[in-house]
Structure formats: C-alpha cells, structure tokens
Image 1 (cartoon, rainbow, N blue to C red):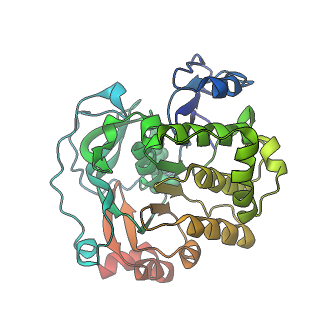
Image 2 (cartoon, helix red, strand yellow):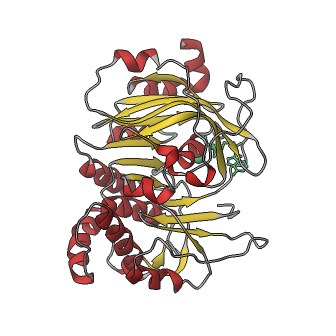
Length: 358
Ligand SMILES: Nc1ncnc2c1ncn2[C@@H]1O[C@H](COP(=O)(O)OP(=O)(O)O)[C@@H](O)[C@H]1O
Ligand SMILES: [Mg+2]
C-alpha cells in the first residue's frame, strides 16, 4: 500500500492515522467510550481519532479511462459527513434496466443515485454518476478495470475524508448517508473491508475488536461485553475463519500476511454484525484454502435483512459467494448490470467482449 494516509475507524471509534510527515498527528477521542479510549491513546503512534470502519487511502497507479462523458457538476456540494454540509441534488439518471427487470425481494438498504465525487486535495473527478440499488438479502458484485473507481466508491460511501461528493445522493436505510459522520454510518451497520488493510502498531487485535464490537452494541442499546464474555462471542468466529487465537494478541494487522489481513477483515465484519458489508477485493492475496474460509464466513453471515457489496476482479470469488447482481464499472460509473452470467462472460472474453455484447 502506498501509505499516503490512513483512516482506521471502528463503530464509534475512528483512527485516522496520518502517516504524512507534513501533517500533525493528534488524538481527539471524543467519541470513544472511556474504557476504549485507553487502548487508543496507548498507540505507539499518535493518531487522530474520529469516525467509523477501517479505511485506508491507498492510491492506485492506474488512471481511469477519460473517454466517458462526465455527468457531474464541477462544484463540490457535499462532503463526506456533516463536516462538509450542503445537500446534494437528486440525480436524474435512470436505474439500470437489467436490474429493474430482475426480481426485487427485500427492502432497499442502500440507494445511490448519480453519485459524483472528486479527490478533495486535487479536485480530480473519480466518480461520475454512480447508480446502485442494494436491497436486503442481496449480494452485489462490482467488477471493472483497475482505476475505474471501485475503491473510491466504497470509500466515499463510508465517508473517507480524501473525497468530496460533488453531486448525487446516497440513502442508507432511508436516511441520507452523507448527512452522517463516518462513525454514525458504522453504527448504522455499514462496514467496509479495505483493499489494503492498515496496520495499527500498539493496538492489540483483541482490544480493537472488543472496542469496535462494544461501540456498535452500545449504539444499538445492547450491553457491552466484558473481556471474558467477548472472548466467548469471538471464539466461534475465529474458528470459522480458521484463525489461530494467537492473532488476537498481536497488533492489528501488524506483520500479518496479505491473506491473514483479509481473514482479519472478515473477523471484524463478523464481530460487528454489519447490515451492509462492502468488501473491497477481499479475495486478493488469498490462497485457495483462505478464499474458501473467507467466503464461507461471509456466506455464514448472510441473512435476509443484510446485504453484501463485493468488489472483485475474479469469478473465483463469485463461485463461492453467489451474486444477485453483477455490475461493471467504467470511468467512475456503473455501465452495465446483469446476473452472475455477466461475470462469466467477462471471464471468458474480457472487458472488450462485454462492450461488443452491449
Ligand atoms: N486519494 C486519491 N488521490 C489521488 N487519486 C486518487 C485517490 N483515490 C483514487 N484516486 C485515483 O482514482 C482512480 C480510481 O481509483 P480506485 O477507486 O482506487 O480504482 P479501482 O478500485 O477501480 O482500481 C485512480 O486513477 C486513482 O489513482
Ligand atoms: Mg480498488
């Protein structure tokens, strides 16, 4: 990962670890439960503590295609949370005809319309009118060439501070997602597993997971877990992921292999019991056994009232986690939506074949 910056947050707790030497690092643990704050303030690195979900601002070297026409306004209207105020205009783009023809089962969990976003620091436009509707019980897969904006979409949805929403809307559980701070999104059950999970030196995985879990539980009005109770809650989840308990004593992701980090991301998801899980390339870096474990764990977490949005390049993940819809993203927009056969078509003929069949 190009560690240009990182935000680490867990329901009610967000650690924005500013690795940029030019930025001052600071800790503002206002949102932390007092018991959890100790663990955070105990970081060997000073961090800025703020919002929700694990985020990392890893930059990709690949540029998106510049061929598509932007449908976005150039003036930023909306930020990643209340810090950036101002509501977006309603997008006028129609829902994908394929998606609208297929059966719709559960209630709408997430509805994204005409979403446009830029990199805040440079104004570079990345998202150019994303439309997406996710209902309870569904699994959506987003595929697309490198640099098409898949990770940016996921980070914008959880409120990553690197991006500014310029137009469009995102409604989650009927509420304006962009009116919520990152930690509020997490409390509401939105979870992002990062393409490149960040390491958090000085914070044990166990403390991190318990803190995250308790922050979510208290936001749901549930009693917090004590250490022993939490271990009982965690053990079966750890076993389901074939993770050695020794991972709990290690610092979050520190020295973990790529596959171990991905398992750890899913462990976080299992602990948080999120309603809407966004999994960004959860399959990357996994060997066959790890892929099976991770997929089985994700499948085990699926319920009729939650949903999964998976970003992937490969059919092999979709062999294990069957998607309700497959979307193709190109130059910051979803340009094609279909069922699982779309991924098979892609596997067989590449992106060019999809263009020809459009
Ligand atoms: N924080 C950022 N600063 C500068 N460029 C960025 C940033 N985030 C994303 N980009 C650029 O936006 C484009 C889309 O990136 P990304 O969403 O990571 O693509 P994908 O996940 O589809 O491979 C890339 O060209 C990438 O370099
Ligand atoms: Mg990506």
